[in-house]
Amino acid sequence: MKPSFSKSFVANTVTSLNVFCGFVSIIYSSQHEFKVASVFIIIAAIFDAIDGIVARLLGTSSPFGVELDSLSDVVSFGAAPAFLIYKAYAYQFGIFGIILSSTLLIFGALRLARFNISVGDLTKKGDFTGLPIPVSAMTIALFVFSFYRDGILIPPYDLITIPLILGLAALMVSTIRYNALPKMKNKSIRQKSLLILVLCVALALTVITDGVIVFFIFVAIVLFGVLRALFYLLINQKADSSNKVNISEN
Image (cartoon, rainbow, N blue to C red; front, top):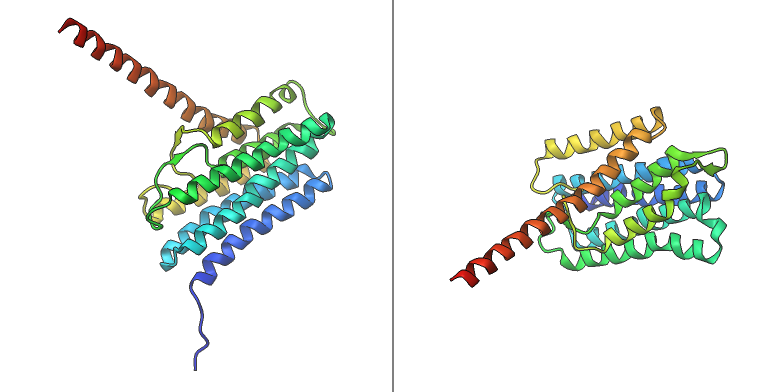
């Protein structure tokens, strides 16, 4: 008699590796090994991208998988980057630093809760409302990896730390639409596999270039969503103004 084996075990194991990397990142942050902690957040993002692909390949997408994925994301992309930025910078501000850092965790959890109740078809992932929490986490990880030197965040980049934290936190709970990352909408397995390759290249570039190039790429991704929203808002306002003028003329 052949032993039973659940295909969902494979996808859930990959998701578990995501949360494991988040836990390891927290450990290294507590030991002031911030570069290593940052790298483990990026590795967690790679596992986060892989688990969705595995689940779809095996046909094991389920509400349980969605919940496990979100719980893992809270640790790897909420708690880990929040603790990282607290230990690397915000600790110096006392209770304010704790509150400031916690916004990445709290707003990230709110972001994930909103996503979970909006999920319809588990096999299809549309564009996101609000900045995806993995993008926020990787931006923080790349920021620390790139600009933490000799026990401090080097000037003048230290000056943007607080605006960066608050901006990412606010964008996660905003209604600004972002293209689905890392799980792309209606894409083939080949295209999703390409995303994994891109993330791996990003990890390699992070190590080779001290993360500076990749950090600015992620900043561009974050700002693109904001600028696109402002563009559409401006277009809609012009359209409304034109309609009002036409109505008044008639």
